[in-house]
Amino acid sequence: DEVGIRIPDLKVIVAHLGFPWVEEGICLLAKHQNFHADLAYWGAFPPEKILRHLEDFRIFCSFDKLLYGSENSHTAIFPGVVGRLNDVAKERGYTPLSDEEMELFTWRNAARLFKIPV
Image (cartoon, rainbow, N blue to C red; front, side, top):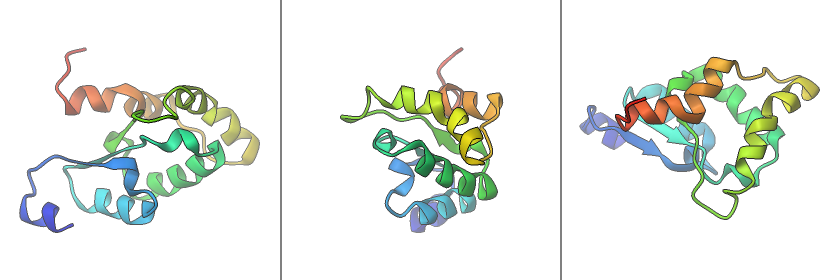
């Protein structure tokens, strides 16, 4: 929070959406325009847990602040988890991710943030 206050133009990526302090991470992203977060490491979580956090995220933030991430031992399984999120959302009564939210999260945000031409 102090970095966001002192250097408001600095782009910050909060690793793992601040896990295990996810609520605090969401608040940081809501408060600071240039804060973003990745979901690296989240392949270890069941889809229900991810969806629960994404429901909270959706309340406070725009999906243009969220980045896919895959830098650990769960890299191989995370694409499958992400691919099943909407099926699980429908089964469990969560709000599914729209096609636009899914595109933002999985690649568009990273392309924009890192200035990768598409």
